Length: 141
Image 1 (cartoon, rainbow, N blue to C red):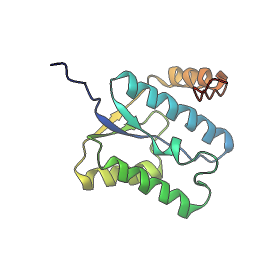
Image 2: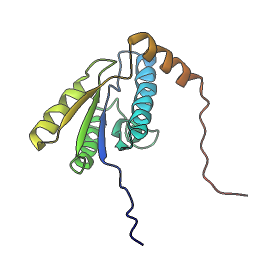
Image 3: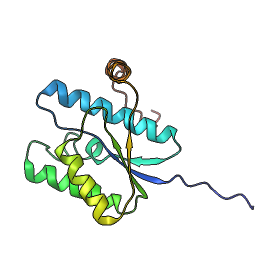
Image 4: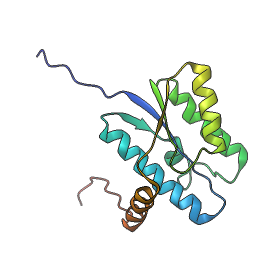
């Protein structure tokens, strides 16, 4: 009865999303997934709004108003986070700069992170690209 549940710290994940081309955006998306994985493996409870709100049928990142609504919604969630983790291997995007200003204004600590050397990160993205989409609802028929 004396065992307490260890609650991971809430971490807001910042990484580039929208790119100059479809391929760049795709690689940024795969990179964001790797960043979330890295955070979970650190024992954190990460949240990456750019992986959630940009899904088909939620918000359209090509519509600037919807893009900003998604960023602001993620930052509202981030108000409960104890850290903003900025993954910088792919550079710092305009959205990340916005997130950095928000974290500073909120007094939330900022941590810059890297997944490795450029060749290693490129290889990780290539490996992630090979994975097939898989959705398991857990429902047995």
